[in-house]
Image 1 (cartoon, chains in turn red, blue):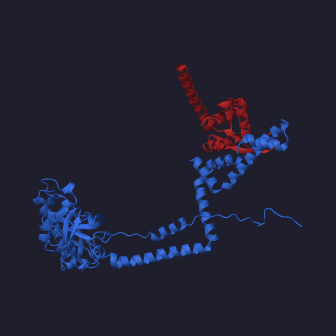
Image 2 (cartoon, one colour):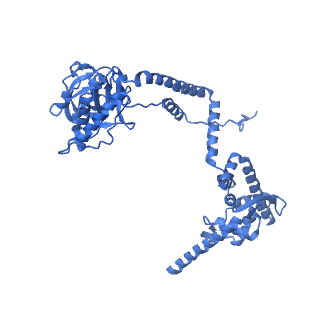
Image 3 (cartoon, rainbow over the protein chains, first blue to last red):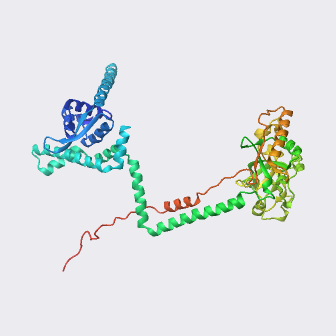
Length: 112
Length: 385
């Protein structure tokens, strides 16, 4: 937590990636990394290389799909998009997360 | 399932996922560098900054590969290829290893089948073909001491019925004890197997009946030669078996090592001394183990003119009568007779050469030497005059 930046919490990367894809529509890896940085105000320190194994895992689970396309600077890039199963997963994970963070907030409020 | 299939296909054909990985990473780095250039960095500095943002490229690639494929399968394949390459690089060692394996397994198999047929398949006793093992429902039968005696006294179709219980016994040599493989046997043991003494005499029913006051034992020829150096005065000596003293009355004939070929025994002890070896079971007040404890495996010798079926029928009849007379459960009174020419049991093993070879490999650590393609020196040091 030092320096006001924090590593992406284990297990939350999936949620973040799914949410990013829902917001942006089909996006390449670089775009996802940039977006995560922007939205979190550069507080979430994503080691960008670790994004790709995560993308692959989500694809293997059938939550996202990918295909080759052309990026803004006219280069070949792999674009990722949410699948129907991915949308369902995102809803479930969002609900889980809200429940979880709600509990933590209540616990912290009670101890203060 | 879907994930499994994808990973399997990537494992079998890693080229495709590897190309995709390289292309994606390259694109990402280029995009990062492009943004850095826009902020005014020189191209090489921009690329450096891009790498800083991205983190370790190789680490990310490895993680990607872990997710994409079954690495264990890949690694086994690599090990195999490495092994083959090593074999090719050291043809001498390979030839020696293959030859010793082939010879070892071949010779062992040949010798074993010979030994198995001639020696192990048959107890070294006269007319082993007449021996039968008592069974019930295909399992070796365990009988009570008294039961064995009753059956033996009444079975006119038999030329002896022995009972034996294998166990290891502590024998004192000087002041240190040693485990010796022994059999606790009934009085008919040597008569049934028709073993003759090499020295002294062998156990009889009388020795069994007198065992309480006069403990005696018989030793094998091998044991006599190895532990007593074949001493002529061995008969009459006392030995301490499980701290009780026994008198040696005889040595069995050469080559005989008990009723189980897979478990050679060097000592024969009267079954009626059981309390010395199983005190917890047997040494209970008012407990007559001879009619209660079914402990003894049984081998019988058929009379020359008897059939196996005839003897089995008679034994079953006698056994049922015995069980009824003692009010014991007579439901499993049936006795079948199986071939006993090989003694009580048999098994085999062939693993030795493979183990030897494994030891050979283990003692020869893999060494890899890097061989530069052009053996050019890295630098010249010296002066040119």
